[in-house]
Length: 320
Ligand SMILES: NC(=O)C1=CN([C@@H]2O[C@H](COP(=O)(O)OP(=O)(O)OC[C@H]3O[C@@H](n4cnc5c(N)ncnc54)[C@H](O)[C@@H]3O)[C@@H](O)[C@H]2O)C=CC1
Ligand SMILES: O=C(O)C(=O)CO
Image (cartoon, rainbow, N blue to C red; front, side):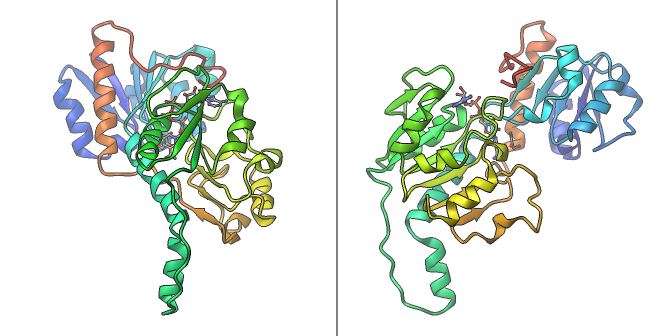
């Protein structure tokens, strides 16, 4: 009998693990905790449904689970799985591709609209009972630059085009794509930064993209531009962003992700008025985990019938 280890965020929800058990009665789904000790079944398990384990816990788990030959992650990002055990054993990793596109794209539109429609100022004025009508900006005709025109980026692009925005994107294999007016290779980042009124970071964290946005990049952006990061905190040199915002190099930013999470209470990021902080929750909606279970189920069917699983990472060592 195949044993599949199920990470706590799925195992603790009876409806999610129940769905898996009813779809695959021939499989033994074993829930694991957030840290060691792990149940004895890990020794014979071949598959791991990953979600929310820290790197040290994942390493400890893999060390006790020598037969694991496939990990499916319920996350879209894969940087959290880059542990030595995965690389040394070349364990194939597949990931969730579309489950979070909709909530994240809606969140990005919400933050763009909040910025251009002065929602924070209006709320502040309301609390002071002050009648202070600001001059709003329009999304219509603005240029949106999406760094990482992948699954999430494409959904954002579609919504932005519906608002009349011009949409530029960068990605590793640039080819024309619905929703985008132009797609370029990663080397076109300076052009995208110079041209965009709003820049959204939606690419994975890899050795290439770590700290891709530093002071020099903020200098390339338009003075009244807005930055949104829903990808990974370490794409940005946070100290440089603080400097850029304090010097008014850009008009503002929204960060959903941070180099260190949870963001420490004494981080200087909390104090910047032009920065909107969101606690890594842009992906959250009641539908997401069920979609993850659906994507995993599709892949588990393939695994059980000997077909290659879908949405695998090509270069584990490089992190993409
Ligand atoms: N804030 C949150 O809650 C969430 C954050 N994420 C983050 O968003 C990232 C993107 O997710 P998806 O769109 O599903 O991934 P995806 O793999 O569909 O798209 C990523 C895109 O980035 C491109 N890319 C890679 N390196 C690049 C570079 N140097 N410059 C420009 N583009 C580059 C790839 O070619 C690809 O088109 C994930 O890796 C994850 O880190 C994902 C889900 C939730
Ligand atoms: O899926 C991801 O990569 C996230 O950051 C949210 O879980």
